[in-house]
Image (cartoon, rainbow, N blue to C red; front, side):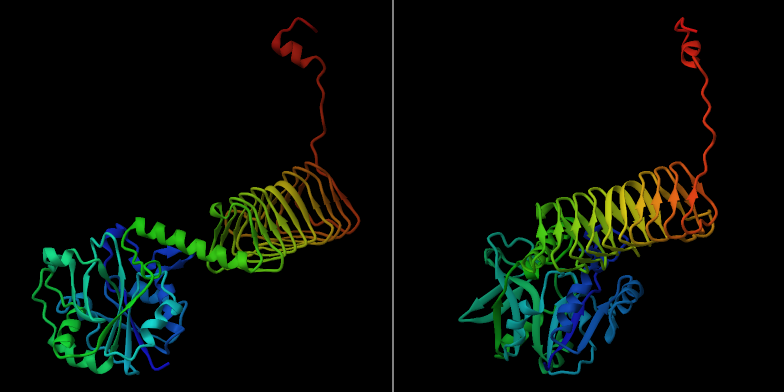
Amino acid sequence: MSLSVIILAAGQGTRMKSDLPKVLHPISGLPMLHYAIRAAQALSDDITVVLYHQADRIKDAITASFEGIAFKIQDHSNYPGTGGAVMDIETDHDRILVLNGDMPLVTAEALEPLVNSDADIVMSVFDLENPSGYGRVVVENGEVQAIVEEKDCTEEQKRIKTVNAGVYVFRKEIMERYLPLLSNENAQAEYYLTDIVKMARDEGRHIIPVWVEEEAFKGVNSRFDLAHAEEIMQNRIKERWMRAGVTMHLPRTIYIDSRATFHGDCTLDNGVTIHGETIITSSHIRSHTVVEEADIRHSSCGPMARIRPGSILEDTHIGNFVEVKKSHLKGVKAGHLSYLGDAEIGEGTNIGAGTITCNYDGVKKYKTKIGKNVFVGSDTQLVAPVTIEDNVMIAAGTTVTDDVGEGSLAISRTPQKIVANFFHRFFKTGKR
């Protein structure tokens, strides 16, 4: 498509009350700016992101995830405002979409009605029962006559319910002609992109409004807006996966990262949390289990388990209060109350309650390798680095510090001592 995109991400976002740049605040696992870039990439091969506040930090975050994005640092001291943001940007195509980086809910599909028009200027609008806080759009006979920022509105203009959604498509020659004519003689002493509309209108240019859904063009300016956008994004994510065949019990209680994927017949119980690039295949994640950056195949986890980054579970059952970190378990049962970190565990192995891999010595982390058909008794400590070969039994309460060969029994216990009548002597019950 012959379209260039300019994404505005230069604002300070003071209403977020945060040291983190506004456009880097995450929504369903990704900075909100990522969603605007994704939508732009579906429409264009020429994308420029305009930066100013914490520019290097934002640029680093974007270049870590995207290639081919151009950046422009706004001359904010001399040319503040949305008009100043788009000055002196070279674009490859004759039509330019101007998009906001704080619109994480926008999609390529929502933008298509704007980019498919051939008007000189196309602008997004929607009607609000209470338009307070928005710029008003004056529309007559299907044409935009003016856009007025609320701070500059007359009382009559404040009664207009059609508001500016903040996304525009300009012909390149429109921007080249009118950007040099912008003035900052207004209440904020800023250069408004919206003033181009008035100048173009005065010269008889063709300017049309396109009514859009408010949800898709919702801007995020505060923590409240962020939470609301998160809810909408979560609903979208969960609807998508339920329509793809994932069963969710009480889906409103479930959190799913936008990067997570599901394959086959999966079930998520209430209270499940899934973070990062998790892959779940034909598995059941039970109530209040947390999964982070893991690969779970044909397995069940929980309730109340935690599967941490780098874990791969295949044909495995992980029970309640079991934590797995950076481990590969295949055909394993770990029913409850265990920690398995930096481990490889083979098929048919049973991990007893209270078992832990002692994988960290305070300086380095080490690996535990457990073979097939190993029975690990309750309250076992496996002090890494250690290898347990196939067909081994580890007695309950054992601390394993050396490798255990195939077919062996490992047992390490303090001899039991019984002192007769100690209870009665200690509490002076009278019985001796």
